[in-house]
Image (cartoon, rainbow, N blue to C red; front, top):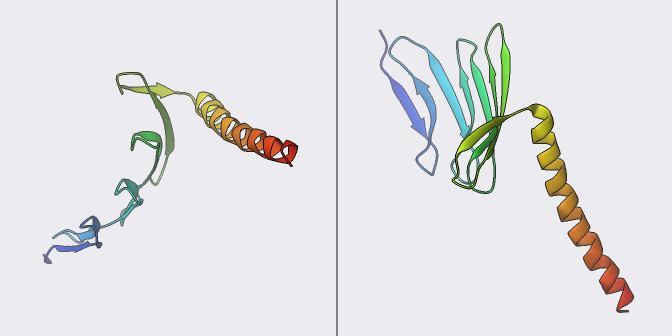
Length: 114
């Protein structure tokens, strides 16, 4: 049996782990220290996307045989609610549309003021 090995990033997040049986694990984090990627030497992989409140809004799990996607939104009490891919895409589209419209309205007013 080999010795356990652990490596950390500058924020003290575990980024590499090798256990005494030889299995290896790699992890990645976003700027808010949320784990966005997890991979193992035996074929399991996990991805996560977070919202502005650091809540998971999309996760993807992959192993040797399957791939699973899960989408989430949160209620007013910050309780996680599972939703469909279509609902998730609609929410993301509305956010991007609102952001775009706020930028274009501003641009139109600036043009009119000239």
